[in-house]
Image 1 (tube, rainbow, N blue to C red):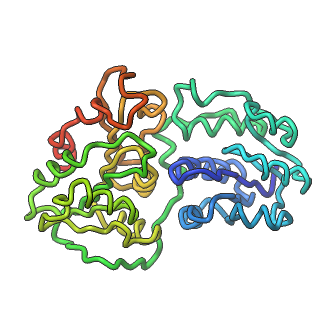
Image 2 (cartoon, helix red, strand yellow):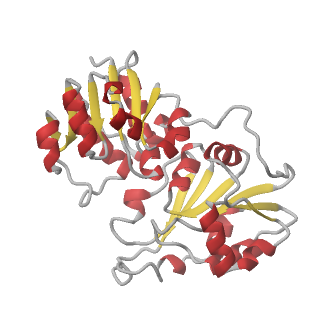
Image 3 (cartoon, rainbow, N blue to C red):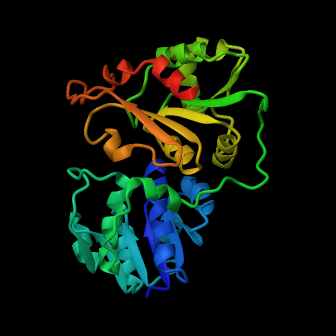
Length: 323
């Protein structure tokens, strides 16, 4: 039985969030084991607020100080040549990775053969394929995975914005830094118009660059009396605090969508019917998570960021789900 297991996922925020159930499941199977996580520095607040993870290692620090990498087992959820090389040099006994990366054949001693691209499984379920060298062959259904996140918002978190406790509080996250097909800003504004100022308080979230894009492309979104612009104003822990003080979150397939779902917020994802961007692979997984997608097979906009199918989803459809 391994006593110290490290998960390595050094890519994007959303990918890190959907890996958290892996830590929760390992904690259930090996309750006395320490579970660590190697990630990028900006994902540290998420990882440190997962109760199933005992310690965080910053990838860049590990590259500079390889002696930090001490464990019985390391699982490369995201392939990383440099970390795999260090893991072998540090003598980690069990080094698990996909067989689809040539450098894993040099540095990992347990290779798992599976394809993410062609699998019908959700991204979070695909991660479980890497547990087979630990004699774990179960892949939990999506409905159960929500129980393994272990993500909690910061205790006593404060916010630099005002929250109206007498209203339904809705978060809209219109941008994705280009990582996903986006619902149009025109649709977001129409949704805002459908949500009464007497009943709703609406927060627009995103990094500063995304806020500037919205102001350039559709500045009128911020002109409504029940809309608060938080773009560029919240740290990641503050964003998590805002989530647990709101009722619902609406976005396309982006990292913050998965955070909201993991925290148990009513989460509505808006998706294109294009593999592998479709919800079967990337839908939000949570106790109150759902999604909307056109029921068709679309290839017409695969090579463009403009997606007619995602914009066929109407603001009224979202408003009905929020009511």
